[in-house]
Structure formats: C-alpha cells, structure tokens
Length: 278
Ligand code: PAF
Image 1 (cartoon, rainbow, N blue to C red):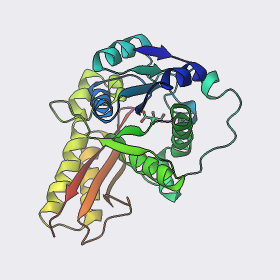
Image 2 (spheres, rainbow, N blue to C red; image 1 turned 180 degrees about the vertical axis):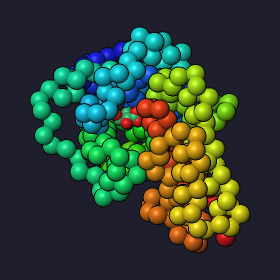
Image 3 (cartoon, helix red, strand yellow; image 1 turned 135 degrees about the horizontal axis):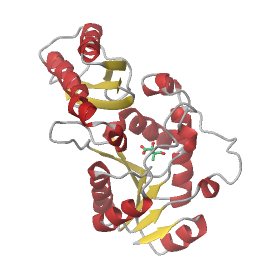
C-alpha cells in the first residue's frame, strides 16, 4: 500500500491502473469505512482511500480542531482492508491558495443538515469535486449514513457530467443499532448507552408508516418528544421521498426517515429507508 500526500506522486502512481475506485474519508476510520473499502475493491483493481479533514465543511463553532486524526492507525487498518493507495494531502496541498471558487449546491442543501450546518454542503461539494479531479476515479463510494450527502454527490456528478459511478454503502451498526461514526468517539459511557435511541425512534416512525400511518408531521413530532424526554435536543426528524429528499406525501412508495439530534453536546445523525408495496 502506498501512502501519498502530494498530487503529482498520486497521479504518477495511478497512471498504471486501468480502473480506480475512490473512498473519500476524513479519517477516524471504523468498520463503516471498512465496508466502503470492501465495495470499492469489488468494483475496481485499485482502491484509493483519501483522508482529509476538510476545513471548508466545518462552521467556526464546529469540531474541526478536535475531529479524530489518527493517520498511522488509519493506514494500518487500510492496509489490512486492502486499500491500494492512501491519499492524505495537507491543507496546503489541497488548498494552496484561498479557495474562492466554490461549488454552489442546490436549495436542498439548505434543508435538513444544511439548515443546522450552513455552508456544510458547499464545503463537501467543493472538496469532493477537487478529489474527483485529482484522483479521476471510475467509481466513488459513499455511505448511506450521510444520506443527504450521498444524494447531493449523485446530483453533482449528474449535473457536472462526470463519467463516474457513485456506489452507495449500507450503514454499518453496532449490536444495539447505533450507526458507526467517527464522532461516536465523543460519547461518554453514559451517552453511549443512550445513543441508540436515535435509531430506535426512526425505526418506530418507519414501523408506523408501514402500518399505514401517513400523518408524517405527527410521527415526526412524537419522535422528537421521545428524544426530548431522554435528554436529547433534536435538530430534525423528517420523512422524505427517498429519491428526491422532498417532504414525503401520502402515496410515496420509497421513503427515508432522517434524523439529527444532540445528546449532551454530541451531534448524531442517522436514517432508515422504507419501501411500501403498491
Ligand atoms: O463523509 C465524509 O467523511 C466527508 O464529508 C467527505 C465526503 C470525505 C468530504 O470531506
């Protein structure tokens, strides 16, 4: 496995590869990333995993400084998992000058995550576009855990005519169904014991919809209430159309219940998909 930090060495290394798949990450790797690398390996001969904590997608009040950085440990895992190349650029390599050109995402980027993290998807779309241009993969793998991010990356590829297949990885969960996330490291033993409730309330909303309840507002309100009773501050619980992420309507078959909430200072997000037979 090669660990490279500059763009010219990476391009030189990738010259000999006929098919490349990219797994973009910010490091702090866990088994969720492993499943993405696994998918990438099935799709191409050469797997590039990028590790870059992208300042552009963090607001000044967010956790950029304390975001887990463990390059040596991450590289050990990536070697075991069969990554061919780790691309771990410095900030200066990726942003040698002030990044003034930015990718302006569509209005959807201002709702859900975007409502609570202004500028987040602008930063994500800009770095993802740069990574696509640098690595020039045929395949890129993103996790469904960041469902809105996956949706917007697909739109970016479509609207900018990239010849690139986006592959979606299923969310990997702990035995109690907590979605794996690098930010789970911020949880204390007490908050870790409570953290799976976010998944539970989303799964309950899914279950109610499957039973025929289409009062989505009520379901969202009830879920928020349950979280509140257990010490959470909910940013959103929202039932959306799975393919457009527009608010769900009665008659929709493919839906996704998305949620984000804070538990004593740690913000967690999750989602569950559902399909109603017509
Ligand atoms: O999902 C992430 O880890 C990041 O948002 C990404 C896609 C690597 C861009 O920085």
